[in-house]
Image (cartoon, rainbow, N blue to C red):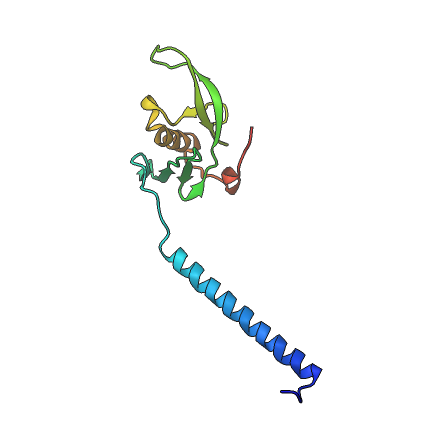
Length: 147
């Protein structure tokens, strides 16, 4: 061992460092693969839907953070929540709530959550299909829009 040159010490030291780094990366990869193998999924919301309406596939997913998802024929429609004054058609008192707008219903917010509006996301999906008629959403309809 005393006969080793400085060059050999550096070479073997570098090789040992590379080996140790490779092992560390390998362990991290295995650990990450195991944790990704069984992700914890939240229970599906009973209001979620995936059905055909007027020949178009409508799919809606409610998220607890208010970032609901809506797809028409597998194309995403970005939704933006805004505070809105609602004047109900049934004659009940006006109220302020969260309305959701999109590229299609921009000036007609839809209330999605709340006691009377649990099916609001599905109503919005059907309204979008009715508005689109024979047309399809563009890719731009899925881009986020902020107010």
